[in-house]
Length: 179
Image 1 (cartoon, rainbow, N blue to C red):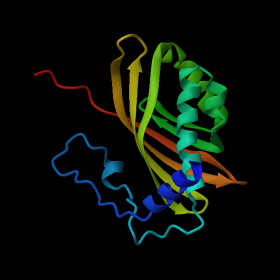
Image 2 (spheres, helix red, strand yellow; image 1 turned 120 degrees about the vertical axis):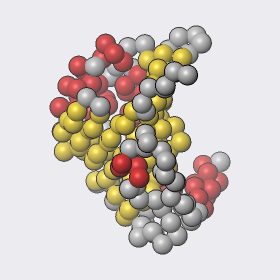
Image 3 (tube, rainbow, N blue to C red; image 1 turned 90 degrees about the vertical axis):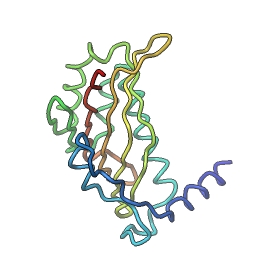
């Protein structure tokens, strides 16, 4: 089962992607307009494996589990020692500053489910990659309600065989306009 999944992911890395149109979208963040999209002419090395791709996706999900369980140290340790976190509330650098930030927003995070979905990984080399995903924040009640949404732009690095967040940028969508 795992072997066939790895083979499927390996084939997926050879698919061409086209850059999404941002024309006329006044809410599209500038960094998304400039985002580098994978193509058949990508400079990514063949040493980037399907296992690397799986480890990056799992890193993203481990982050959500840590935040949802209010385990700020577990979330902070997923960043490289000099990692950077960008949020609507500011920029934090280094694992300890990132952990302190998550502790400061714990009351706001209680009772919420942070979900990272539709993760696309673009390898840059065998030790560097970009990941692009959507962020959903749901109120954990029944039925769940969507509290916020946005995007996440990650730069990841592989050090001593392990993937880390080098930089993580959260961009929240603007509130919906009432009709």
